[in-house]
Image 1 (cartoon, rainbow, N blue to C red):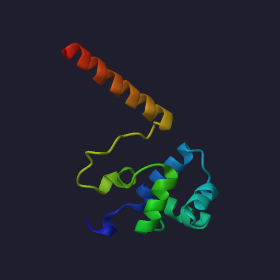
Image 2: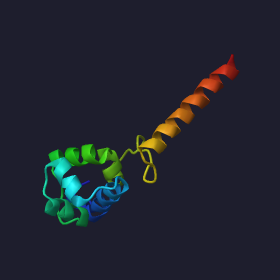
Image 3: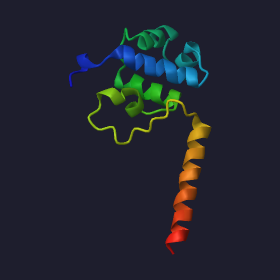
Length: 110
């Protein structure tokens, strides 16, 4: 896939949605990433494409992965956890439930 095939508006919406999930303003995200709020706004509207360094900074600040932000453009999305509606506490709970199921399943196999 050529980079010009990437829908940067969709990418920007993912960034914006995740920022809002974390109750961050564009200024908050700009401060966390050492970018300008204007640049964040341009990314969110799809006017700009991020460099690799910017993508990494965004992912760190938004507590997400490049796979999550770019999932529409990857050939393999096996490691994508659809977590658009989950916050960190939800994810921890899901992991605890999965661990409990695994442990109790092992008890029944004995």
